[in-house]
Length: 124
Image 1: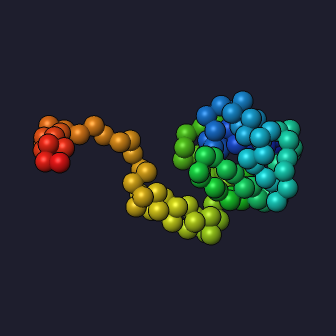
Image 2: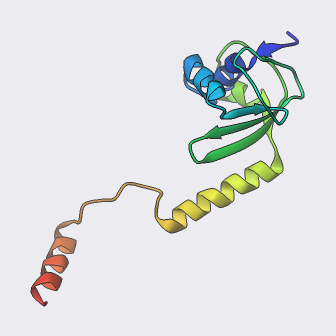
């Protein structure tokens, strides 16, 4: 196999859960192939560079192999290599989100915290 559709490869490489989600991402301009926009049917070759945007996550990967079958995660990771600047930027963004406290849902106060809140309100 020397070429493969972009949406099929994104699905097989486990960037998206379904092929239709991969197609929607390509149509929505979230995927660039070799620094240019593309359509879902664009043919991908080994050595192409992709820029992938998923939510707040930005990835830059190089295509190492082509596959039209979705396999285990270990096989999917062998299809691409993330560039070093992309990996560093992603880790910095993850740390920034953790520092800002946006890493998880807001929890309800427990019994002790509710008691402290009630005491603060009553002291006013």
